[in-house]
Length: 459
Image (cartoon, rainbow, N blue to C red; front, side, top):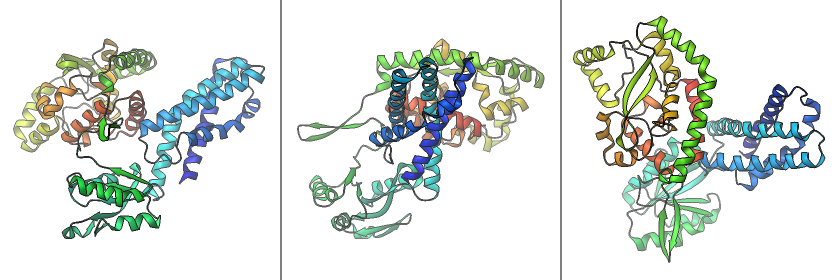
């Protein structure tokens, strides 16, 4: 398992070295001789050492945003060491410094993509994960099994469920259910399984303490599932209140300092994006005009931060009489009316033009929203912008949703997009707000590129 991760990480670092070298040669007439540049490749083990020190091998229980954060730190320190050695001994310090600065920038997305491929291959060939025993075969225990088996990248592989209730004996999704939590100590002493998950939130306090002390503590690590399912955050931590266990989390996205940082990044990246993508804007505008009569852009009403009405821009992807067409479609087709009421979308929508279908499949229709980001109506990453009729679907969660700006991309967009049901969309938006960090935004932006290129869930 670790060997596979090492190969992927080494490839990412080598590719970043080469990218930095070629980019430096593009902007510098004198350039760097590739042969002399290769002499710095013996520094590669420094990256592996830094990654190891930050527990990225294998890094099974770490979230992807946390892996990104740790790799960024490790890569920065390794590159800084190389640049320091250049300062001491190299004659052409400026050129090499620039090349390795480029290399550091490239190393971050390259690590993300290489790690994603490495972990996917390890999961496919059943080489990823650590076995875990789950105490509790009730509703919560089975929910834990579902989550772990549905997303094997989490890294815990359920091998056994233990429960005191003899009526639950049997199996669940291929995982044996054994009566008697007392077996836990025997399993722990065998050393074959070193992780226990306690999923018994409704059990009496005295019994839970007994299970932890007599059974779970025999394992190298144990994880307790609290009775707060639905309140999730990447950054939730434990705090000792003089012997009382407490869980706390900061709402980082509501912090003024973080709001300012996020806004600054939105301005910088939206300006860069509009400059780099301006040729595509011209080509797309011409294609839209040639394909069907009507304006190039389409403005749609949405709810922004604090429920403020905003108008978001898109390249027009529908015929100009789409509103009348929709009314007729929903009146004459009850099944389409049901689909529309569930998702406010139609999978095979006849209102979409030929060019519009391509734009939607590739998400190019949303590029004009870079202007909305620059104006401050949207953020690059955030919850999905919704219309007035969708507020009731968010229920009590709308209060939290309204406290932040909606985004051009978000967790929903990179987690199946239109293929996800509405309940999942709401859960993803809430999870994003509760778990926000710059690293989560970076993860979403990097994954957005993959999703757009593949066209997953777009219609």
